[in-house]
Image (cartoon, rainbow, N blue to C red; front, side, top):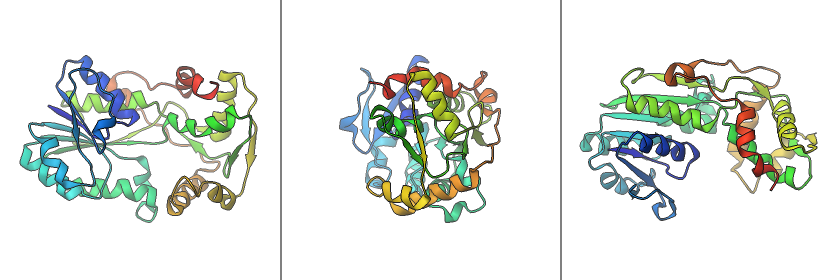
Length: 278
């Protein structure tokens, strides 16, 4: 039995599809299992990664876990997983943990703490460290549909947009085959693009004219005050500042793990164009 945590997440949803297609027994956990929309025959279970009381039932009979990086009760999760006989955990972390100041950046630290919590776990632990998700482009959808400019503090900051399906495929490979287990894997898309270049591709795919306004970091932080904590906004700004004008190093990890090259940002846009137009 495989437990997928964070069942409402994009990667979890794609991973469930892959595992079911392979005929594997899967259980999906979430802090709000009643909100899950699962295929017939796939059980939902309460698994709040901040609430250790939900761990024993979620882990009963489980041999492998796809784990989101929530460090609040990571030690308790390891203890419960050990008692349940879990043999392998695939952690969805972030390449931000590789930054020299990761421990001081709240965005990176949340993932780093989860990795550290699993460092001495008795079961095999595999770590996936994706960079920027292609789906992050959804944050521009409202402005695009409203015909308003996209406000960016660092429009020339580079990213490495990776398709959620490729992250799920990497997790699937680790969960179903012994090769490359117990290692840390940095995942990227096939190309490094600035925010401006990404928005140009959105315009090309959707046929819309999209303006970009460069705003100060302080102005952007103020605009985001209702949507994210100030310390997380600071963490993102710090990351984008270091990526400004600096192309991301691309890896071939997706190809190594899955046997196929990663999908392009353009392919993600073609699949999701309606989100920017309807």
